[in-house]
Amino acid sequence: MDRPRNISVVVIARNEEKCILKCLESLAAQDYPREFFEVVLVDNASTDSTSTIAHEFIRTFPNLRVVENPIRGVAATRNAGIRAAKHDIVAFIDADCEATVSWLSTLERVFREETANDSKVAAIGGPNVMPDDTTHFRRVVAVAVTNYYGNHGSVQAKVPGQRIEVDHLPTLNVMYDKNKVLEVGLFDEKQGNISEDVDMSHRLRSKGYRLLCEPSAVISHRWREDIWSWMRNIEVYGKGRTWLMKKDRTHIKPQFAAPLLLLLACLMALVVPMLCVLELPEWFCVLLLAPLSTYVVLTLLMSIYACVSNGKPQYIPEVFIVYTVTHLSYGVGQIHGFLAKRGSDTSHR
Image 1 (cartoon, rainbow, N blue to C red):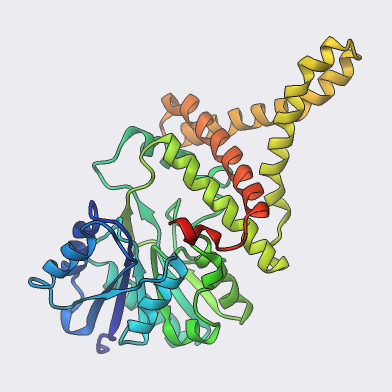
Image 2 (tube, rainbow, N blue to C red; image 1 turned 45 degrees about the vertical axis):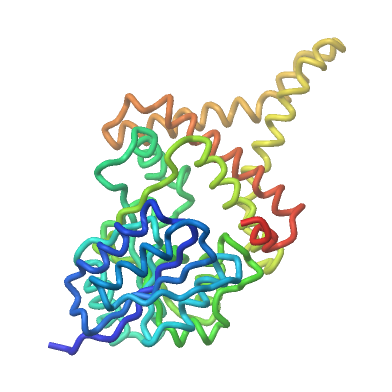
């Protein structure tokens, strides 16, 4: 049997006092030999008790180190974790996540198997699922994101049936070859607080490296707890996507025009009452309403498909709402991204 590899597990945190303890406890409970891994918690200028909780946890888990990073931003904090890591294999898990007991050993086993066969493998990641004590809203979202209409192909939204090669691995559950990350220039700190992992995946693949998703390397993740926080989060994703397109035109894809076209369709529908007052031809008003009507029908059909295929037909109205606000919020975020300087969100984080 091969000797276990030395691994650095990096957790980045800012004001995560409500969940950081459970995350650290899950890492302390790993079945991976303790002498072969360390946990580096990078505190990004928290103003709550995150750092205090972590320092106290060292008493029972000496594998933990706490690193302070005063530079605001998720990308900068991830880079601080990589620089602080003692080992050449670096795994990331977010502070609001909990690892299953075999999470680290699974990632390491798959990483070892795949890199032995192909030196171009740069990272192994896995999906995330909701914890058992989740809310009704999160269960609705979980149904909505089981298809491309709700997840845009993200591996963090649906557990694949087998190990697959993917375009992107979210950093809430991933193991990197640190040297390959250093080769492409670390995370782009100008990207601010969002989509830094999408950019990293893109740059690794542009160098010819491969990213793999292992379905058994599962973590639990507490998604946004209500529709308003979900909308705010999706808006941020849309903004981040625009920032990526500003940085590199190869990020531009036709499907990213869809949320913007939906916003345009809504605006067109809003002017119909005014046009009716002007007594314009009825066919012209119908023409203006056609794009939005088409979207409504398509979204309803996709809501029915998602709910029935997941055995939750009672969720159809709520999934319809989730799809709609998700697409609209993403479009608003894209517009925000056009107007805001890339990485400007770190100034008020």
